[in-house]
Amino acid sequence: APGLQLRLHPHQIAGLSWMRRRERCGWGGPSVVDPRWVGPIGARTTTTTATTTDGGGDVETPYWLNAVSGEMSLAPPPSYVDSPGGLLCDEPGLGKTVTALALIFARRGARPPPPTGARARFCPEKRAWFYKEAPSLSSGGGGGGG
Image (cartoon, rainbow, N blue to C red; front, side):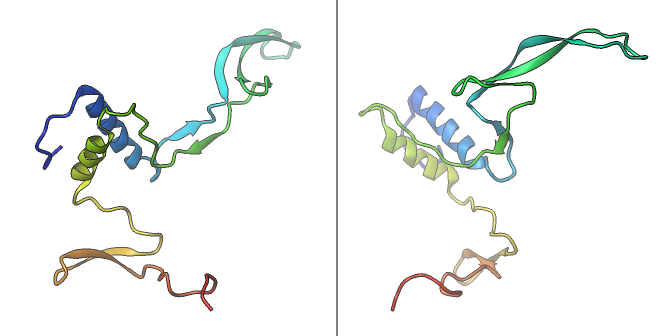
């Protein structure tokens, strides 16, 4: 990682790579299949009746298994957009702090995508990015005080 004056161990490099991938996903990234479902598992043979086009017979249909409930389905399992983040759960003494610092150094200068409806702008006087038309935390109702 640039800016870090030490060499990472192989498990720290793997952890850093995993954390960088986790920070990139969730912003229109790939879909993740519900982890409770396993499959497609082989195929289930079903018998069809004769029609004018295929003459009927056995058809091999893939199926999925819900490993929690035991339910079987011919339809593919539901999927959802993966969200960023995760937990770094190495054993004590393996260098989680160094790995986290390596991530900070690797991400230095990166900025998240702007909120919906806002545009990122650069302020040369403060040498910082800000969001134009971003919703203000102090505007709107609700929230404490009083």
